[in-house]
Length: 371
Image (cartoon, rainbow, N blue to C red; front, side):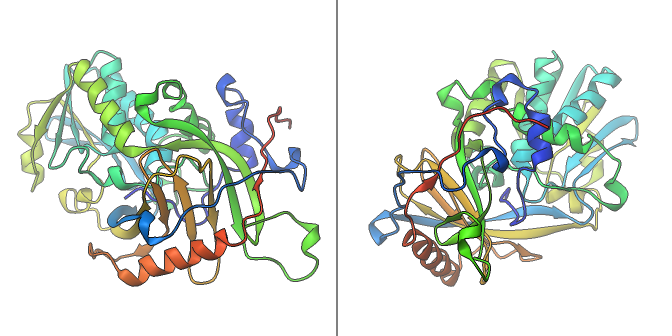
C-alpha cells in the first residue's frame, strides 16, 4: 500500500531541480510566502453521515530501501524494481525510467512485467511507448491492487536508500526531478485523475512565542507548497486503457517459484511484484507495513491537503475526486488485514480536533524559485 511515511516532504533542493520543467514553475518554497497570508477554507465534514468505509493495505517495505538491479535467470534478463515502501507513486516514474532503460539497452523482442501495481503499469507504459511488446502478469489487476488504495500524493524525501542500494538506480537528483515530471502530461486530461493541490506540513506548537512562526489547524507549519495529487482509481484505470490500446497483453497468473518465471517465453522480465518479491526471489529484507485509511464521502469543496506529526500518531488528509482520505497508520511488520475500529476512532477524533482550529488555509502564492 503506497501510503506516505510521516517524514516525507518536498525539499527546497527538489523544488529547485523541478523548476527546470516549465509546467512546474508553480512549485513554491516557504521563503517566498508571506507569513500570515491566508485564503478562506472549508472544513472537512466528519459526521457519521459522511463516513464511507475503512480499508487496510500492506505497503512493500524493504530494509535498505527500494531495489533496482539486473540479474540473470537462466538466459533471461531480470530487472528488479520493487520495495518502494510508502512511496510507490512518488518513485513510480524515476524507477520505471531506470528499469525501462535497462530493458531497452538489451533490445529484447518482448518483455514480461510481473505485477500490476503502479510500478508495473508505469514500467509497461514506458516500454510500450518505445515499441517493445509487453505482457503483464499478475494475480490481481486494477481496481483490486494495493496501489488502488494508496494515499498517492507526490512528496519527495531526503533519502530512500542505504546500504546495498546506496548507489543503485537513479540519482537523488533524478528522483527529485522525475517524481513530479512523470505526471505532468496527465494533468490536463481529466480521466487520469491527476491535479495540483495546496499541501501543508505541520508539527505541534513550540513552547514560547507562537507569533514567531505560522500556524494552521492549531499546529506549527513546517512547510507549504503546491504538489500533485493522484486519484488511484482513475489513474490506474486510465493507464490500463492506454496499455490496452498500445497492444499490451494482460495475463492473470500467480508465480510460486523462479522456475515459473523461467518458463515464460520472454527474453527479459521486470519484477514489480512488491511484497511478493520477498518469497519469489528470497529477499529477506522485505517486510509488510500495515496502513489503514478512513474514507469519507466526496467533498469537492476541499481543495487542500495536510500531514500533521503529533503525539499519538501521524494524521493526514488527502482529497480525491471519489472520496476524502484520512490517515495515517504505519505499522511495520504487521500483516493483519482486518480494520481496527480503535484506529478509525483515533483518525476521526484527531482530524476533528484539527478541523475545530480551522480559521483559513495558508495561501500558496505563485512565483519564481531562486537559488
